[in-house]
Amino acid sequence: MTHPTGEAAGQRGLDGTGEFGTGPATPGTPNSASSPDLGAAGYSAREGGAGVSPAERRARAALTRLGEPGDLTLARFVAEQGAEAAYDAIRTSRFPGRRLGDYQSRLASFDPDRDLETAAAVGARLVCPGDAEWPPSLGVLDVAGTIDGRGGPPLALWVRGRADLRAVTARSCAFVGARAATEYGLYVAAELASGAADHDVTIVSGGAFGIDAAAHRGALAAGGCTVAVLASGVDVPYPRAHEQLIGWIADAGLVISEVPPGSTPRRPRFLIRNRLIAALTLGTVVVEAALRSGALNTASWAERCHRDVMGVPGPVTSVASAGVHRLVREGGAVLVTDAEEVVEQIGRLGVDLAPPKTGISRSRDGLDPRARQVLEAVPVLRAGGVASIARSAGVAADEVLAALGELFLLGFVERQGTGWRLSARERDTRRHQSSGP
Image (tube, rainbow, N blue to C red; front, top):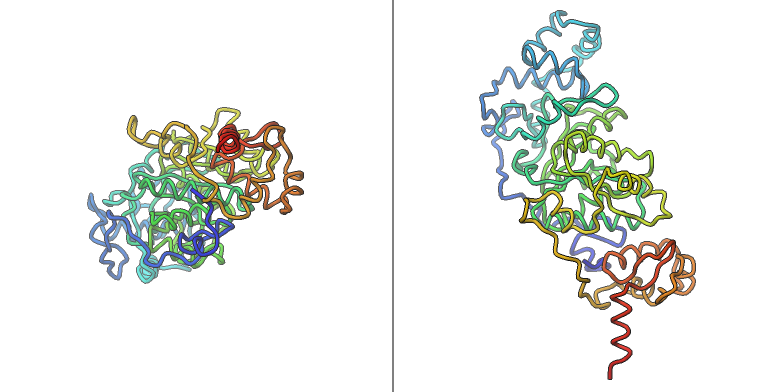
C-alpha cells in the first residue's frame, strides 16, 4: 500500500500523518450487526440469550458504579451468590469484609435506572454474562491471574453502537502502542490495521492518541469494523480531542467500557482496561512501545490470556520501539511486518496464510513525491545514515525517517547496521534499467 497524500488521503481517510481525514461518508456497519430496539431500561431483545432478568441487569448496572473494574472482592461475591444478592448486601450493610464502606460511599450519588436510561439516550446498552452477545472469549480472564491485585472478567459491559459485540469480536485483533508515536509508527499502524480490516478482521484499541487512533482510523478508512475500549463512560469521549473519532467508531463499530455513563477516566482504569483489549481479541499487535510503555501491559495480559502477541520492528535507534524490540528478542512476541502476517498469525490454520515474500511488484509511480525524493538519495551499496540521506535529498531528517519506513515496507530499501541502502530488488531493477536499450 502506498502512503496517500493530498486528495487521495482525503478519499481514503488517511493524511500524511496517519490521521483520519474527512471521515467515512457513510459509516459502515458489519453485516452481523443489527439495530437493537432499546427501551427505556436500556436493553434490547437480543440481550438475555440465557434469560438475564431485568432485576439482574439493574443490579449489575449498579455494581459497575459501586465497584471499580477488576475488583476481585466484588467479583467473587457475585460469582458465589449472584449480582442481585451482592447489590442487596451492600445496600443493607451485610456485605462481608472491609470494602463495604468503599461501596456504600457511592450509594447515595447514583440511580442504576438513570444510568440505563442515560445509556439508551446515546445508543448504548448494558451487556451482561448470559446475554446472547456476551463474548465467550472474556471467560479466559477467570484463569488469567491478576496484575497489581486486579483482574477477572467484567461484571458487565456498557456497549455503544449497533454492532453485535460477540459477532464483531469473534475475529478481531488489538493494536496498541505509544501515544507519542513517530510518523513511522502512525503510518505502519494505520496501514496494518487497514490491511487487516480488508481481511474482515475487527480492529480493537483504546481510542487514545498515537497508535490507537491511527489503528482505528486505518480500519475506518478501509470501511471495516473497529472497537474502542474506553477507561471512561461510553458517553465521555477521552481524550476530548477524539470526540468526533469516537463518534465515527460508534457508528461503524462499537465503543465499550466497564464503567457507567458519565464516568471520567482515572489512571488505574487505563491499566485494568487493557485486560479487556487482550481477552476480547485473537491477538495483540504492538507498534512502538518504549521500555516502560503501557502498551506492554496489554501484551502481558495477552500472554496471560494465551493470545498471540506480535511486534512491529522500528529503527534500532528509536527509543519508541525499544520495548517492542525487547519483547521480540525475549520471545514474547512474533515479529510482523505487514497485514498478511498479522492475519496469518491470528487466522484459521492452513487458510489465512501470508503470501511468500517474493518482492513487491510496485513501481515508483505509486510513491508520493517526497518518498521518491528520499529514494533517489539512498545509497546503492554503502549504507548511509539518516542525516546524510537528509542532506543529499534536501529533506528534514524526521521526514526522511518517515519516508524510509514507508520505503522499507514497500521493499525499496533495507537496513544495514545503523544505516540504509537500496534493497537487492531495487538494485536489480536499476541494473536492468541501466543495461536496457
